Length: 163
Image: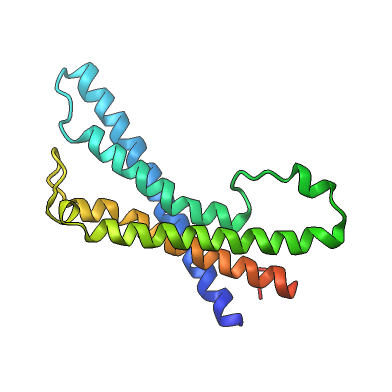
């Protein structure tokens, strides 16, 4: 099982770096776009598009990091009021439901990636095939499933992230 945690940690670090790069690209492109538009009166044609796509990657890849670290928004007001003996089974149930939901979203995103409209479409300003842009969906969902399964294993065994 230690191997699974090492793989999970590797995926988490990779997702963290991809998220950092996405945020940096988005910030730099927006800054450069503002400078070009207001100081040189010559806006970038591709700036808005690049910022949007970076935001999409940041959102879906970063969600797996936030999920693993327990930083996603959750409603635990009611759960905290329940007896401790009920909290653990409820947490396991919620994690299983999350895995089911994310698996369904992964299935839908893979179907979306296979649609002809996605396969033949290119982005207007940059000319990038849209299948590369839409790939953030199945990549993010896959990473979220991996991290959720590791979290489920931790909940069931009581072992922590370090193995």
